[in-house]
Image (cartoon, rainbow, N blue to C red; front, side, top):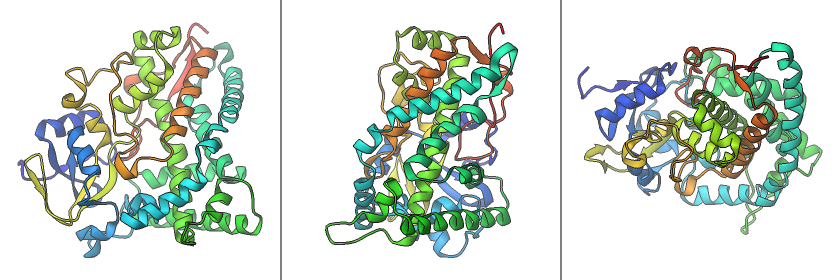
Length: 408
């Protein structure tokens, strides 16, 4: 394969970190081929990607993406839902500031801080249920029984999303991130998700509630602007998907890392290292986001000696830069919760920095500390080297993680 040809990213991400290492070896900026034959630029150095995320010549609105405006991206393209969603994640300039200010009005630090006791209660309930299953040598899937129901419950209760629709939401969220769904499946899934959320908003308007959705509906700028219906639905979609899928992957990846690194696990369980350090090192070393779509060059931009042409797409290779030796030293490939605190980009950077970062960190710290305090002998019931990755270039985690109690 010639250096001028795009590197094809594996849609199933069977060896995400191995491929990321190859991308870093090829250079700081590499042309890659996404699922469906669409190309984009991957920036493999953390400093360069951070600078790009703060560069005013880099946009989030897909109207700047030449192949999309030229009609060359099919509607059922596997990553299209992340591109077309109407929310602050795909807005720029004054439009972005308006949307972010409206959401910030509703998603206040007070509202997040008030969630701690509820998170602890939910974790306690899930651990009680796990204890019954793990007794007498039983096994359980950590993801199904703990890592996904916890954040799904938290974000659903925050938004007032009905319990009877949560399993369906989780299923459809996974399809949103999948890189291997067919065009027909992608279109059908988007239609179903929008119908669910549109109905949810209508019900909230008819029956106002004191939750985040109600606050979003009522949020008004100083100029009297409110979220449009499309913006409200898009914002809820972003919050629900990111608010539970990303945290689920964070918890799963942290547990996997601790299983694979017993010395690091001992530091955390003994109190010699904080659980917050486990969360931050997991976000760096095994980011829940592999490659996140998308940003767009609004003019020709020189990055590390390579010109990214105007109208080209830039995929945000968070997992690749998380192990960038130039940012994290010669031991960047090693999981170490004792390393000096280092900035990572798993929550983005600049004006698009994730509003839910504090909540994700809070959930991760509570979940991990309570899990290993309750089950100090917890271990994998399967060979960690044989775990099956989630088939997505976006979602970086595994499909299941069977756990058991050592010696039981």
